[in-house]
Length: 144
Image (cartoon, rainbow, N blue to C red):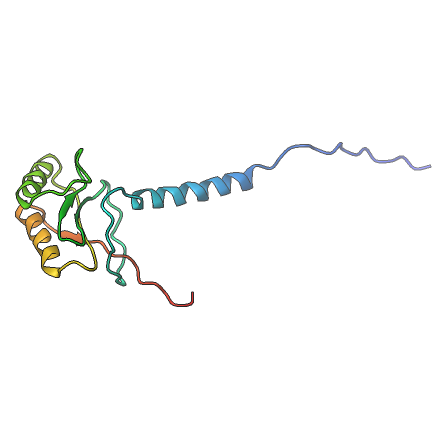
């Protein structure tokens, strides 16, 4: 008769390492998509193959030009209200006095006259913005 070896009792622990990996992936996804979810005026953005802007430490200020050529600024209580060019200029100057490094982007509807988007960019530069970015959406890939 042989002596049976002492066997360890089975361990009933849950391996949480895969769950931590999944949580980290979800965290990264939410961190990347959170700045992309913006409230504001609905515009049909033009499509362009462009590289994403480098990650900035502060959120950008977005000037929106809708399909009718109205200007909107996503700062303050009246984000969804159109602003006239003079008010836009004054608000941008005040914002730049407070935070001179804030990035400024222009989001123009694809159907709006190109000149209206240029006027929004000129207003931003007149307020003292050193460089103005344009927001586009990537073109749709057929069949992928």
